[in-house]
Image 1 (tube, rainbow, N blue to C red):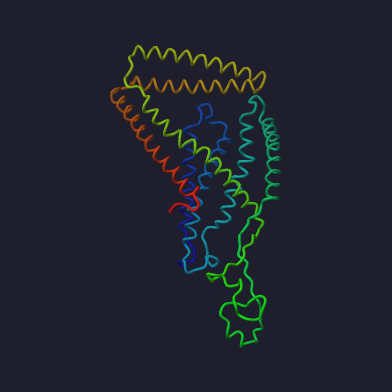
Image 2: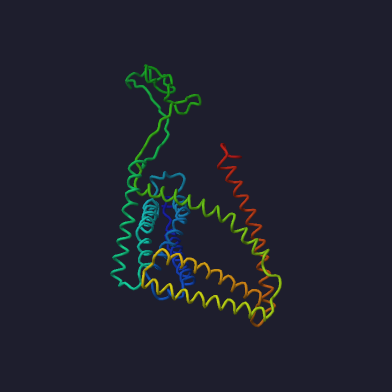
Length: 368
């Protein structure tokens, strides 16, 4: 029946979008994975693709829910609609799967992938399982206790009351205009007519125990908003500033071949030093394990490696090579100016965003 909620096209769109998300995430993983991880470490790769897909689908669930409800005509009550997609079950499935992924699967893959590579597969599985259990037990206890104490939803409701009379008393029923007073026989309204403008019934709080999946969804939303505030707040400032600094500080001229050779030799010496330190750290890992000093040294070496890669990128820009180096230099300069313009646009958007938050979230009532 048309308008009763059935929209089979949503199923086709959902399958296509899910497939595109999987293909896109697979491409990202294949494009950005480390060269040493090719054709190995399949379990962490599956976890990465699953996590990215769930994160994307959780965002797309909202328009899917809106489209699913919009398929039902406004003349039909929602309880009578024959919806195509069981959105409540889908919401629960997505968020509960994300909870299991975040609390069990991802920690297990991290412990397994970062474990001692000299141990056998069964030993690494056993070590990872022990660490996961040690992580999940306190986390489950914390979430369970919090759910038992604060796992309620509070509704503010208006208290309405009314009296009673016999239906056989037709003389009183004939004079009924509003409602029956709760403390007398008659029809004078008293806290029972919610449509009256002058009726101000008292309010009370109605607490209802929420289901655990809904509690998990609310907890994930709260944690997500906290992380969004932190990272979005940093990005609002950092991204436009980085773009502007990249535009301001980029080299204005091409260097000579002699200068290029000198810098390349210096970078080669640095890379040889990093290679020697990497071999030494690998030897220490095999002999002593991943101790705190070893992890600190690895972190410092990775930072130096990132700086060396940035230096290499700058060197490639200031000494373009190939069949048409002049054309490559023009494109490099143009890209830096585009970054500067994007930085200005980003600053404007950031300021508008901050003003929007102040005007519509901090002010009570919001600006109109």
